[in-house]
Structures are given as C-alpha cells and as structure tokens.
Length: 101
Image 1: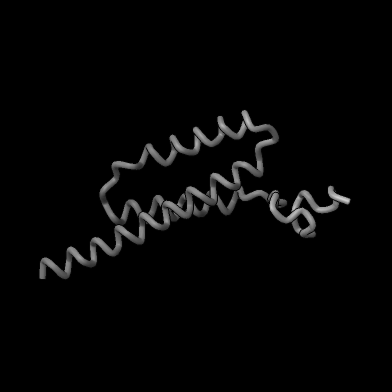
Image 2 (image 1 turned 45 degrees about the vertical axis):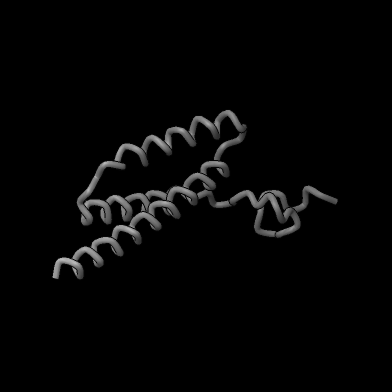
C-alpha cells in the first residue's frame, strides 16, 4: 500500500511542478507585455520570481493546489489585453501589426 501511495504522491507532485512551471513562464511572458522598457521588465521579473520563491518550501499538497489556483486566477485577471507578438508582426491580433510595410 505504501508503494501505491508514494506513486500517487509523486505523480501529484510532478503534475504540480508542471503547473507551476507553466504558470511562471506565462506570467513572465505576460510581464514582458506590460513593460514598456527592458529595465522595467527586469524589475517586474525579479518581483515575480520573489513571489514564486516565497512559497517554494510549502510541502502540503492541498496548500500547493490552492496556491496554484490563486496564482492562475491572478494571472488571468491581470493578463494583458493586447499581447505583443514579436515573431509574427503581420498577425492582426498583435501590437506589431501594421508596423512593417
């Protein structure tokens, strides 16, 4: 029974780590959308990293799930309405549309 419990525990922890990684990457990319200058982005990115690092030592699975859900809700609330799409400037939905001839 212990092996089954530890397998379930490890699978849940792996899923949580993946969700946190995805949330951090999305939030970091969205921070770049809000920053007008690169030095502002670096400041915001380090503040974002500090918020993630503050909860790094949490071990309770339910608490981790709640923190992830709160982080995803906060990210969805503050997501940029017109994200910068740098690699495809001709795409109509991005800020760079119409900048190139």
